Image 1: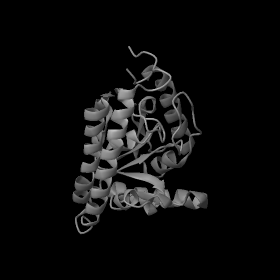
Image 2 (image 1 turned 90 degrees about the vertical axis):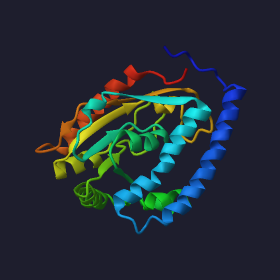
Image 3 (image 1 turned 135 degrees about the horizontal axis):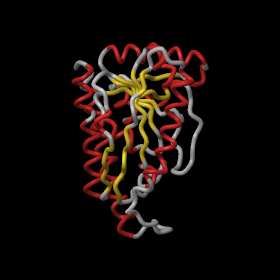
Length: 249
């Protein structure tokens, strides 16, 4: 069982969070520069090299911050490229999904690729970068790029709420990921997790605990309407979230 977290973090948690922040900054700069030299490599080879950064961050979170994680229903993960539609609470899931699921690309705002160091590394990973302000044109970009990435063997990860939503809250689920699945006939994998209770949005403090990631039953996108797919995904995720509780110890 988890117990209620204190109103303010103890000194040990603050110190460990600071050490992690320094280690993360140092490794990000090194890998961002190194990633530029992976450009001549084939996409999957480039992915394997660059995502070593992710594995290092997860190891640092475990070793420094005592932040662990577990996966429920991993047997539900299909073998073919799929569309992952996940709850979005923190940056943690963008790290862990690279270990939980096969090689993947993410749907993200085009502006993120301009962020120094971090954006450079993202650009090397063949993301589906769209202009969200372009309305239906953004959906067209999503389907065109998403179809091409899956044809190459990549999975596509999308956060249908569009932005990180604090634990206990519910964002508006957007149609993009379901639209992609309906247009391509891809399988959808819904995902719920409680990462935000230990790794908050833009939060400096990293709490100790065990994050639970729950994989939902797959949804076949063939012959389905996008709004029907989205409703099924949202219902499963939001029903699953209360069962996960808090990750803090």
